[in-house]
Image (tube, rainbow, N blue to C red):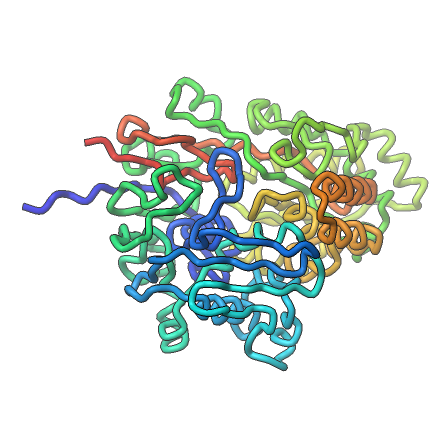
Length: 507
């Protein structure tokens, strides 16, 4: 009789995509951690970049070129060995407009990117295969941290012979290089089961044991409401689940099974900076002064989340806890500032994605603003896919989270504030030439200390303009069935995600 497969049952919301080219939101990105290994990966404990599908890389002295030496024996899930030519195809595929990748902007610094976006070319001129085992990437502007970009799953390879043969099948049954592969095609609302890939190269340097994973199956189960998933964990139907904010006090007595993990994440209220009255920095500051963030943290999260007075979380800012926003809760001063600007009562909405733990605190924030400013703000809950589409044309207040794609100040500041990111992750449509200049100069600076100083200037300037109000830094709360697993290393990583590759099912 065959042994029962060892599985890990994990809560997720409905992903928007499971193709490496477009896993831009949390749930798709979580699945792709196991489906696709990029050239570079990150230590779960420290975020340090380590060789993964590449065995090494070298950035040129001028920051305009990076050469990756591919690791021998890395195979696609259908068996073929990966070559440098596969990266030329895969990266070009991401950039092609018909692919529809919301992550293509990560390659905007690559030579030939705009030609591909504009349809003048099908292949990124700056991505070349130097034989089977060396990939050269040439940039249009210096970027000394460019190797970190190739830790994002959007840069993982896919086989052209499958992606091109049947694009619709590939959308629901993608093939890449990770330690797990799709067992059956993804169907909306049905979750996804991944099976262990026996020909995985098992030498990912981010993991002491090579990152092959120990469970036979990763069983991702979809719940529309986080509370339902929480109850399923208590019934023994899930092994890993996030904790609804209202359930944090109930979870504290569960000891090691309740995981409270600081992570590189920042929750914020966004302002559409090209829509009146939010096009006025003084109005944005008045709104910020009318939100009692600490009261929301205390009420909705049992006081367990750190108040954010800057953009970069502690994982990236280190010991520097400078107050860069200078926002204090002061409703009277907020009303006086609005009166000074000639702004009367405003009728608008507050948009957010419902059902994943945001409802309570959003309603509290809306109530504070209505009471403190005399405004008429209505909460506008949406399902996650609808909310993501809406963000591209945001015209009211909204809530959003930014979590790092890779551990770098650039990965906070460029997506959120650079004008080139408008239409991608700069949902506030903030545009400030000086911030653009500081970020671009930082990217071109080889000296690490000087580079970080430039990023700090850009952060300070953005905080002064306040296109978004930082609320709190990330703490992820999980319940984990540790009676069923031994875990080698951190249970949850710097990104706030369970390190499922390190979960070893107990006999």
